[in-house]
Image (cartoon, rainbow over all chains, first blue to last red; front, side, top):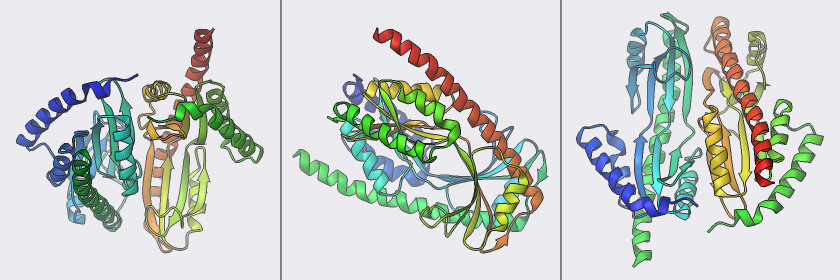
Length: 204
Length: 204
């Protein structure tokens, strides 16, 4: 038997305190703030971390070595091919990758029923990789995540494997993915607006 | 309150029946069969679906449209660049992608404690994207999944965007990913061998 329900209010208080700090220090992706506020206004949930989704150019010693990876460019929006080319110019060593990552939201839930309700809502809105990320005495954590993703090797140790026209192509595809996941985030925000209203009605 | 524990034995019986059918029809990736047998020999788990991981070349109208996607080549092993080039030659329309996907195992658990035990075991062995995929009256489902992945656009509507030497490069990276996830599957199999033995000792 896990004790996350018993610890929910205390953990939410802590999480809200560190969110306030992160907001004050401009450490939260700006375009996801309204959604975080909406989720945190609901009595059965709170957010613990989030990313609004991004396109990036990254240099890493080998695939998956996050610790020694360096971002040469990172954008939480559509990009122009020139921005990517400029980031690629800064490449010097290791594997060079062009990456797209979907938004990720980590949301703690009060009960398993609350977790499953949010999970199914998110999947229904197109966040098909959503899941319950972890269960412990401290927290029951839902991960909201979508399918958009690109992992394209561009070169290695200073050598470039692709040309400018290829980069233009992949930027086009990446931007389409960004538009798609931004749309899903928007719909989630709208649905939670109604959800909050319904929930308050139900508890009356 | 979810009733998956109450329904576990009946659901396991059904799943074992359809696994036997799939095995008889050669519909299960061969190199993952010993692992499936090991998991299904444990009293608190059963598998519902699985893929041992793969490299593929795929044609799709647009990214994410699985329904209308066509595999031009699919391998549950390391590949030679020539195999990929040959698959690419069959491309005619839509977006052309080179893909790597990590192994995925769906495992139903008897109780939430059993689910979390397997989840944490899998994460500890490097299956870092493992999660609880769904919770319902029928089933409590753990997804075992790793981080290896590539999504590389190669061309569109019959036009190729990359050359042979680029395909050789990405095949090299993909093969390294295959070696990595095969190693993780092997370790999971070994650990579950011990786990099974321990569990039987515990229940005596």
